[in-house]
Length: 442
Image (tube, rainbow, N blue to C red; front, side, top):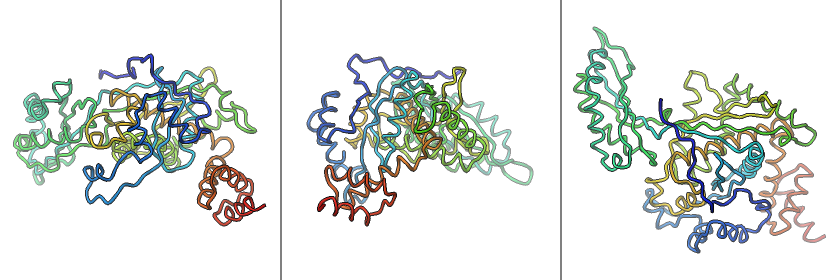
């Protein structure tokens, strides 16, 4: 049985609480002061928050043809408690309501004991394609017989990884195209490696490059692609939570009614791939912002999540919801989570390093479990809105603020214009401009 990690980290006496009541009411400066006080940030780190986390000179060392940087809002997900630990969660996202909704859902879950999470070891799969194989069965037998030698060759490419407890662990052969008297076959060899706190793409790709010629010789064929798989189904996080029904009460709906509505919505997603796609998008609303804020590969996470959702041939939800024996709402999520706290963009992106400091995680596995919890919270928030007042209600209220700002409102006028826009239901720039003019010149 594979070892799993469920302990987020050793408890810190000085770890800040993720409960910050009224944080959204503070000015930007006051939010910074609160963050500096809680995390002992220095002035350079505070300046990073004000400057987008990345200067063009640093960006020039990360990607090609740099002409500047493009900033997205960075907010804090609050109230998160995972395996008994509190986390302030940096979230980089442009969509209104995502951070507030996840924080509100985390507060509900907190009343039920917080999120519980565990994770597989940080195992990544790299594939070596073998084609023009005259006899698949003989090739498979020959490769498996040399498994120890092949894994040793992989390990020789990453001595640093071996020193910290990682390295190649397994080798498997799969037939993709049958061989026969009149045609050659195709095999794929999976090498499974423990990448520790790195995402591991470069590590495992280097291993694959090293063993590909030997694999082709053993198979009496040729090697093709040597590349990792983003379907990281050996690196899965599992998160669960329980929510007391009284926490789900919404205008005109009892907590029990909302819980039943969420379970019904979950069953809808389990039975229909069209609904499952939107259900999972709600999960990724929480996952992607944390992945981006911490400098990880959100495209790889998305690819892995959706391919995992379809692994049985039908696209299914990554999270499901049921009522438990006490009548409480219980949610469970499982998805691949290949994220890192070392290497890659983290070396060059000071904003990503600051996000990890705010989050306070020590390992990639711990980071993955927190990200999974944020995904489950976002799913809960979306389903609760759909089961009760409707998701547009909260979303459009925040959209009204954006329109008010676009019309030129500042300070207290932003809330005044947004409130009137929301009441009238006509949330347009033209209407906002007219309301603003009237409020300025009553």
